[in-house]
Image (cartoon, rainbow over all chains, first blue to last red; front, top):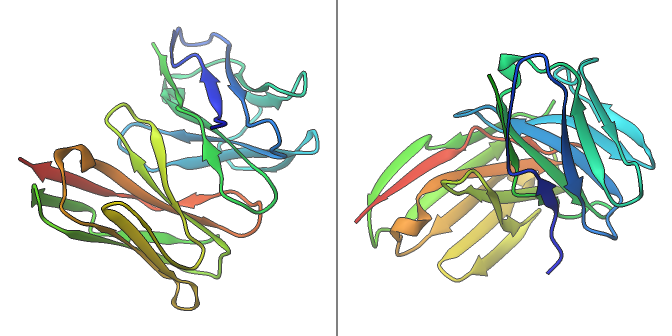
Length: 112
Length: 108
């Protein structure tokens, strides 16, 4: 069964460093998303991406964040200069037109 | 934006008991999903249920879209059912809005 794949599963980084979280969405999906979940809290939306551009972003998704679909299969989230409060589980999701969203297994990011 | 409320926030049950989790949402939606977050943090798709009733083994779900709620039923609970259950809703391809979850603990 097709699935959304995220790498790495865990990443520890120093404050101020850049990180890139990677996702491979399901191949015939057109809509892509990043969400995050701070420990013990609910899942929050970061950004949605369709037709090679951002379709919506939340207040959390400031200038430190960017997304890219560099090669038609990968979908990446970059955090330019990490802060302690960026520590969270980051989820990638994808779907076809107006259907069920499928989530990856998540990347646990720890900023020290 | 759409508000999603889940109840109860916490539920502790003996193994073998049945439970009902509720999700209320504030506006019309055409996509509702239930997830189970396991101890490793993974979000496991349980149901895609914008309306009607579905069953999968010991789990079933019902969404009454016109009244803006959904219910998740777990029968004959097992310890592996423990974790946090999230409901999430959206319209079309918009972002999913998640509820705050129900933390279910099953005691052997």
